[in-house]
Image (cartoon, rainbow, N blue to C red; front, side, top):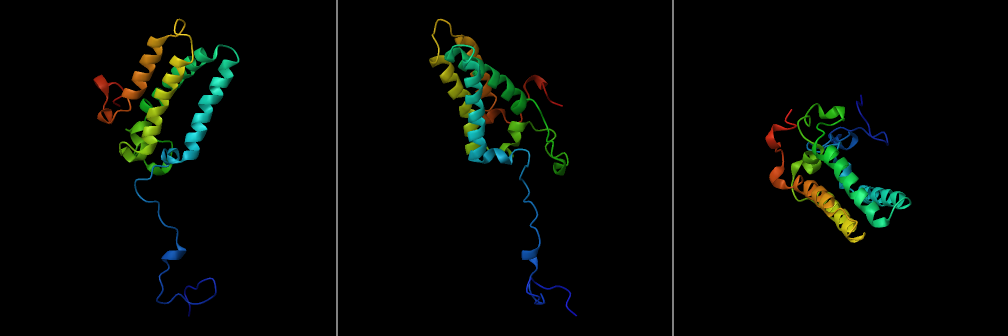
Length: 169
């Protein structure tokens, strides 16, 4: 009596059936953030920023539009990356409930290409904002503060650190 057979009908006696089973997901892969490691997501993210600039530049000067993009981007990414906690993925079973989105990137490993990309984006938008407009009409202080807050919050020394207990729970 044959209990199991392969596609050709041959019995699987003495053979491993491991090739016919689905491999379990390796531990440490976070479905909430692992998609950010692909260059396609980086291109989409950059494209969204450029699209926002194109949209805003229809209504204002291009340099001031970069300033608005930089400030809006800094506010949104600070909230999404460094304030919101947890994972909407049910299979995580609460493993990431106390971690922010940024702390979940690459399982907390520092200086990965993904983290470097997302740290470079505020710097590039800052440079575009300050060089794209007339310096007399340019709010340099706002751009500088937005860039400093965006970059400093991503430093490895601030990984899992809550300043003054804010956002601790």
